[in-house]
Length: 73
Length: 212
Image (cartoon, rainbow over all chains, first blue to last red; front, side, top):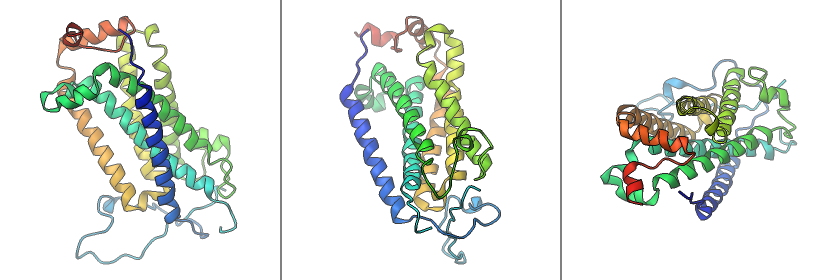
């Protein structure tokens, strides 16, 4: 059995990947999430609200928590 | 903060998402390949578009490409002057001062993925059972990558990132469940797969082979 190498399909995958990379790059640059302050103690992700980050209709509004980028050391 | 070039930081975040999505595609194709789902009459069009031997080739290509992009995701952060990761902090589990647990999960995923991609090339040297058992680690790689992304990712607080994690995680879980229930129940398919493995060929069922 001769394998079909499908060069064209692989080319499409590479092109789509490049497109995704550019798209995510633009999305991330639009909301950089960079702040000079040190990272706060404790978990930065509230897993109780993982699947509904916007909260329910009657949920009290939480202050916006900006993810902080910290130095490694 | 503003006086530092953040391009490499943006690149590592963006490439992380793309590598994760490619990994999901590779895992999903692998599960489609082995679960028999692609052969169901309801999705005959999909079967025609991705006949089994084509899917195998794509699965292998996606796996290798995912590993390359993952390596890019890891090492593109090195030139970043702000966070200052070293190679050791990136590659040695728990050495990272930034969220060491979730960074370690990512390192484990990288190493397991490298072993799995290498296994495509030495599969003739091991038994089919051993190769298949090793291949189950693919699911662990995906789970580790998901945990790494959700736990260490800067963008996890963004709704769009959570939707990506939730949707891909749910679909992968559903495919694993389907495969666990239906994929391994047909002994004839397993025999076909073992025979193809011995001959170093991509798997095609008896019916497909009879049909040319």
